[in-house]
Amino acid sequence: MKEIKLYNLLNSFSRKELNELEDFVSSRIFNKNKSLIKLHEYISKNYKKFINDTYSKHEIFNYIFKNEKFSETKYWKLISSFALIIDKYLMFKEYSVDHYYQKNHLLEAYRRRNIKKQYSYLSKEIKKNYSNEFNKGLNFFLNQTHFHFQNISYLGSGESIIMRNDIESMFENLRMFFIMTNITSISIISNFKKDFLKSSSSKLWLLDEILEYLRKNRTYMKKNYITVYIFYLIIVSKINFDDEKHYFEARKLIMINIKKFSKNLLKHMLLNILNYSVIKMVKGDDKFLKEIFLINKVMDENSLTFFGENIEGDYFYSVIEHTTMLQQVLWAKEFLEKYKSCLSEESRESTVNLSAARIHFENNEYDMSLQQLLKVDNINPYFYLSHKILLLQNYFETGENESITPLLETLSKYLKRRIDISDELKDNYIKFLFYFRKLKTVSTTKVYLASNLLKELQKEKFFLQKKWILEKAGQQKQLKK
Image (spheres, rainbow, N blue to C red):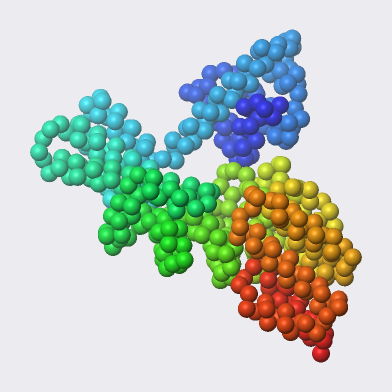
């Protein structure tokens, strides 16, 4: 039944949301069909059956309609109606968290009914709230523009000071909405599409003009529109990738104001600077490994790691891998236990096993690490490569040299034929294999070359698992003595 809308909707629900839905379904304002209340009752009692897709439509029908003969048409009409009531609940939930949107529509109701006194009181209240608002994002600018437009429409064509202020504010908000729409959209797309800014900058309408406006007015923007200013820094850091000052300024401003930002804006900002940090690390700047850990830790502390959707397996394991590379094994273990249930059903088993294998390896529990690796069957390139690299490390630690050579050849061939792996990431894996071969040679036949290997590694830029190879080369040098 996984293809039906109701299953997909309910599979995204937490137990808390399912309980909230009960009040919504039971309200006669939103629903007058008693059968839907009974269906919610059944789903609540059999929640695991529903999300595991093991429920029976005949069982559902009998629970709701008792002694009636099963009707396929009636059953599907019921299921469809319940899916629609969930849609209404989701819309209501989104509406209820946007207080400015609610106030604007209440103000509009007063305007249409010509209730001048209430309109005046509410208008003053909204204006005061806008002036105190810190989170000036897309919704803020859109709602404030709507507010000023209503005031202009209601006041008519008078030339009062209030009227002039509303007109000036409305156009200021329109300008900021246009700027914010552009830079946030570009920041999102550039996270997923490599070199988007470089290849598309000439086609992005008014981007140069927007950036120039923000550059010239940076002091004003930083004081009055800090959210817009941070996204400006994010965009500039991506355009001038080698100039790290924009990244560090953005990161500093985010951390200073972290308790003031809304969760949605904060997550968007953090994901952008995380993306920058990961690329910098993959390109060989090892100080950004600490930046990655800091950002992931901040996301966890602010309940942003899981934000109402499944956590992607690639992201989940990358957190474990990057954290253990800094020897923060206890935090990695806590992260695994805390968020493993948030992984999508398709990737959960492999992701958990690969993550556990990495943690066991860092704790020198090589047999347990190898046992976990046997349970990883995800063929995603990142998982495949991470799995094989960890397997090589385990073989080296346990002295299984006969298993190493064929695995090295398999990995080399795999890297050559994969065209969907970025050049930077591929370079990391190639360097690992290059130095791993040298480490194997030093450890088995030419121990006297350990000093040379150490010198080579110390000159080399950061690459994935460089620290481990450096440590093993150092041990070989000590054995030589």
